[in-house]
Amino acid sequence: MALPAAFGSGGLSSSGPSPLEAHLKRGGSLESIHRVHAVVCDHRGRILMRAGRADYETFIRSALKPFQAMPLLSSGAAEQFNCGERGLAISCASHAGTPNHAREAFRLLWNAELDANQLQCPVPEGASSPLEHNCSGKHAAFLATCRKMGWPTESYLQGDHPIQVEIHRRVAELLGLPSAEMVAARDDCGAPTLRLQLAQMALLYAHLGASTRTELEQISRAMLAHPDLVAGEGRFDTELMRRSHSQVLSKGGAEGVQCLSRMGEGLGVAIKVEDGSRRAKQAVALHLLRQLDWLTPTGLEELEEQVLIISPGVQLEVEGSLRFQEG
Image 1: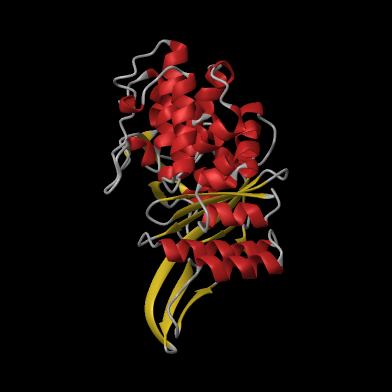
Image 2 (image 1 turned 180 degrees about the vertical axis):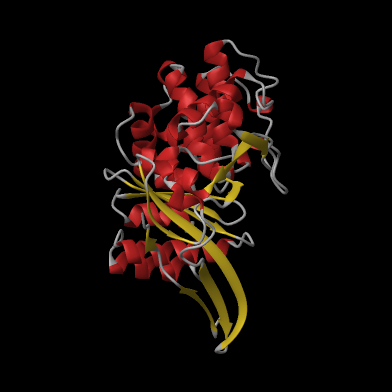
């Protein structure tokens, strides 16, 4: 999938700034190295800074969720079923499956006169209901939208279902691409996710922070107002958004994907760890937040203490930095 012209030819080259590296050291000796690519884009699609390849392709995984929630708003389902900001937040969540999280997903279904047994996300091991799955809010939003539009609810995860077609159309529109060029595959929860270039992910999150599109502004406002619903107590996305004072939106995905938005400035960051390490993506996110000056030193220190918990004598250090895009 080629980048649109707005990205500039510099984003396509495999030469240029080296990837970042997260080094795990034990007792002062190097034990593991994680290679990491990162890109900063504005909402016009211009690559401003990068480390590694802007055209690195991978699946966006759960970082797609804010955009998968768009049809809930555009269809009128959110208004008709009294979704509110909490319902929007849980629709974008990769939550911890707590009773509070399950309750919010259930409320969205209840208001749309739907039942939890219509959810097609798996029942987590040791759980009793699909409401406890970390993607239950997204699935509930899919079903509520289908109810509003009169679309089939039994096949809502199929790639050719109207809601999935609409999601892909809306994402393609944000990226300035034909919808037919979108490459999808099944995520672990059963819903389609998209294979994108890192610069495209950063552009999506730049749109999320630009406040130029009503639906995306509603979604970002809901996530920032209820960060506890987006992930959970002690989890990276929740704790970062809390400490940013609603200035930085954070949403991760599996296999080392992390995306950030700078609210009001229309800037997006996308991070990908080649080996899929979660600890490395979080360490790199904090490293870049420090470089970009998007979080206070106190906030960064608190986050590092809370989310980068490593055994005594073990350190995770990030080498390298973002470089300004040339040309």
